Length: 268
View 1: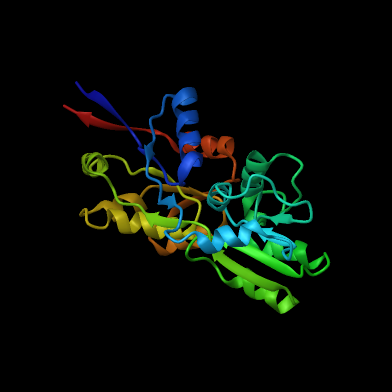
View 2 (view 1 turned 30 degrees about the horizontal axis):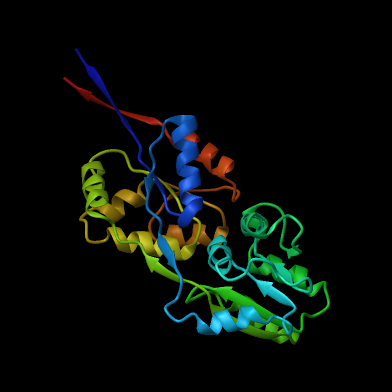
């Protein structure tokens, strides 16, 4: 007589900070799913903060401040409690715009592309900026590295663009507990990975590289992401099953649940 053993696919969440915790808690409370929390990066303030402090203390000559991600919002909130009235904030998508409103209120002026993450990003934001008067000076506050396409396009428009490092991203290093959990899972079903940036894909694949078979195990699973650019990076990393969703916790939860199929193995 056959007996059935059920094995659930692990769920791995890779966003930094509270965004990761918020989705993990949603899955735990509503669906009794204990996700693995693997933030691809830990966000820290830079060692040298004097230049950022001085710049944010006097924004009289700045017309627009671009915050590319929720991480940049969390970091800049360390310095800024209220923006001067002449400042327009800019974001590349609704997720960051939501974080801005949470940090500084519903009435802060924000320019951002509305709609799904698939129709957002630097290109969509630039199209909105092009329809306005050229901002005289744009301050971009981001991590230690970032995509250069938008700063270059703004300079070509005639804007004086200042890019500053407001936070440092420290790549994921798996804890001893996470390594053991991963090794124990390698013989079971491959996971559902929720990942929202190309850099995060690279960080996660690098973090598991020392463990034999871990990269292949990850790539056999399902990746859920929010932008076609991340889809391409996942496919380059060997993922064959990639789904795209909006940058919304409930939408991510629905995709995770849809893919969380119970695996069975027979034992005699």
